[in-house]
Image 1 (spheres, rainbow, N blue to C red):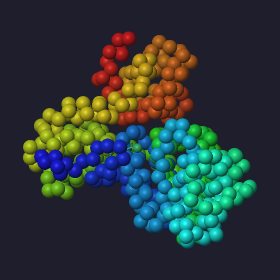
Image 2 (image 1 turned 90 degrees about the vertical axis):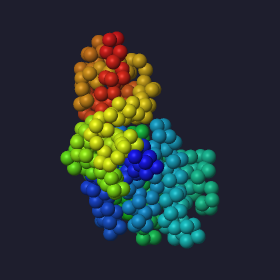
Image 3 (image 1 turned 45 degrees about the horizontal axis):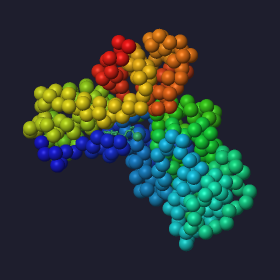
Image 4 (image 1 turned 60 degrees about the vertical axis):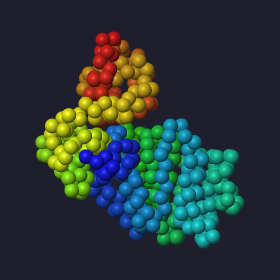
Length: 395
Ligand SMILES: Nc1ncnc2c1ncn2[C@@H]1O[C@H](COP(=O)(O)OP(=O)(O)O)[C@@H](O)[C@H]1O
Ligand SMILES: [Mg+2]
């Protein structure tokens, strides 16, 4: 059918034509903002899930919701080894300028700007970020050099400025698993203080599923500070079908039910796979309703596309030995596996295989769902390894 009106949206963070199955999380976010607006404290949220399940898309929905309520929003995709201090400085600056333009700053906003200056001088000495703020650093606040303390001073000042202007600030952090333990701990400590003061400042994050554990290790009270909703595949009987069918029905076309069954079964309801499948199928289908035979026909093309676009980029940076480790895990199946069991399969002791496993975690290919276990961060990764790297089984 006409590719010019193909409704599907495969990609990273691309808004789906029908966002389904996330009502609970969106509702929680609304509740969070409304409670903070009314001076109640509320647990913030860190969305966790595998790659391609819709975390980034959900953060974007949260941003829109917050903007509708006139909150200041700052988005930040964390990168490995990024410069935390300078990133925080520039984000707080943006938030401050969103709360009110400089010409209309209240005393509290000016105070927050001064603390931002101290913070910036301390953690980002080249200081480009505060250029134009035109304030003096406030000595003794936000400049101790201890990141958790200084960030707390900064967030509290920002929260007070927002409160005085009748608004709030939400930080939206994607790929939050790339923060170091110290950085995560500093953020948790700063937010904790703001929560205790019922200030309208909050952080919503998204990241791979090891995050609740990392946060727990960083600060034991993080479980009370955050909820960690996990999102994943869409329900195959309802939401996954809607994600596939609604975009087409909205344009006046339809699917045969056998075609829907086939696609939902292959994709297991994973959002990214559904988008990719739908896109191919639309382009290939000759007419409405799209048939099961057409769905079966495009499968090899969809698979080839997924291999190229989604799976291969993840293994490109893996060494031969790391690939062998991944292959051994794939042979054991899609669920989490014990480190000792995988090591055994590649004829190594757990200690010998430890560094391989750590590197794979560092590269974002594996995560640890519980002590001694590892699992793939990418859905259906086991299937990919088995079909693309079969030769590794003979090594
Ligand atoms: N609730 C949903 N329903 C249908 N498709 C979705 C949904 N959430 C995300 N998608 C699609 O899935 C793909 C991956 O989304 P993304 O937010 O990048 O995932 P993640 O950040 O978890 O890796 C995108 O193509 C997006 O359009
Ligand atoms: Mg993402």
